[in-house]
Length: 265
Image 1 (spheres, one colour):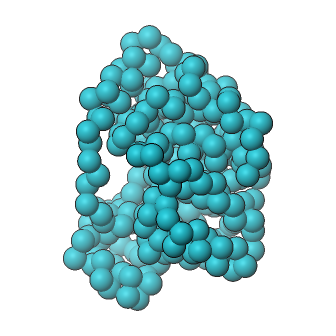
Image 2: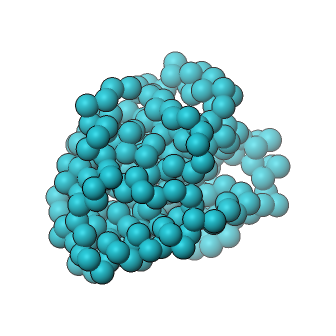
């Protein structure tokens, strides 16, 4: 199955560099990598350009002007241009386990979207992380917490089954789905502005559309680099958008990916 790995980023090239390095050591590569850039400055563009010759697969940069937090919009634009039939989505501050892509593709099924979790890299470890350009971690590694999630145990993961119920812990930093399912619900809702709930609202509409969810535990591991909590000024409005999707059993959002499908990178 051809997969596109989509990475959302904003003005943190030091973190994105480690993410891109972790892609280079994947045991199974995606068809392409697309950087969904919500308005980063020139340094991020230069970093991405430098990696185009290092990766063995195409690396695309989809950028939009910085007009505040517009994550839904840039993800829609990136996925509209994706050539893979399957989308694996992460954030630009999440270092990938070497089997990350392989694990997602192992459980990719029609009628199902996947939700993974993350291991947190501690603030106190950041200096060492960037100085040593560390991209490999395990259960015993220094500088991480919630380390139980760092256990890569593919045999154990088989016991977690697909479920009909809505997954409250679905997060855009570690998720995957079929591109045509995403288009069928019109992708992310572009009405979201500011931090939070765009991924949960998408999960609500996936659920209303009839998709099952499978939690990926002990596989598909990402290591989230600590950063200060983003401002949550728009959270109340964003939460209301999610509740509307839940209460109205919404499948299709009016302001979504369809308007970008004829655009090209």
